[in-house]
Amino acid sequence: GTTDAVVTVRGVRKHYGAVHAVDGVDLDIRRGELFGLIGHNGAGKSTLFKMMLGLVPASAGEIRIGGVAVGGRDFRAARRAVGYLPENVVLYDNLTGLETLHFFARLKGAAAADCAPALERVGLAQAARRRVREYSKGMRQRLGFAQALLGKPRLLFLDEPTTGLDPEAIRDFYATLRELRAEGVTMVLTSHILAEIQERVDRLAIMAAGKVQALGTVQALRERMDLPLNIELRV
Ligand code: ATP
Image (cartoon, rainbow, N blue to C red; front, top):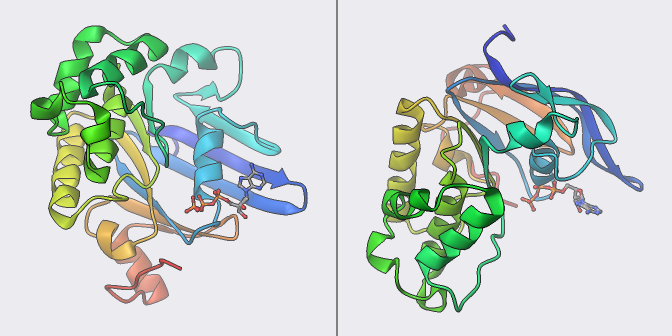
């Protein structure tokens, strides 16, 4: 049913000229679930994310978060309870990890007191006072994740959150997601790699050419589509 849906997407399209980046998507994200959105480069995942966050307007259709229409008058307030890790987080090399989070906290109107716990949560407490220029790619990715946790969001959108992470860091990352889920946080993440997320998400949608091709639990999708265990959707 839709009663426990925290995000509803109805008939959503995004056209860039002749390009149908998102071509009629219907989707419910249930409260408290970890939802995976998988597809090749160019499938439309990032565009759908940006519309769900109100960063780009939809060409057609409607998206609601907690019952509030994205892009509508009440959305600005609702948006504060939503965390977002973009595909490419812009970081300033000269700031330390902690300064970076203070900067984002000011932008978002989140409490400065959230910054140190967010760093701790992503395993960067020891690196808090080092400059970002000295961070590895994986550390930068984790700093981006920490930024998304500021303001203690109840809903998190994570766009390719494991890019640049080694296998151990990927395991740590999903352990953190499980903690967040235990705290009742709803999460939507994108990936190219089915093998990485299939045992870790509650439900997933497979997106191709701007459309949701299949949606359900991994088990249900496997039965329906005969998905092999370790297919990799990377192009
Ligand atoms: P990726 O894994 O590369 O992020 P994706 O599944 O997120 O892929 P999108 O980035 O949403 O895919 O892109 C979907 C389609 O829309 C692509 O064909 C892309 O070139 C096009 N597109 C996305 N943003 C724009 C834009 N601002 N202007 C024109 N075309 C765009």
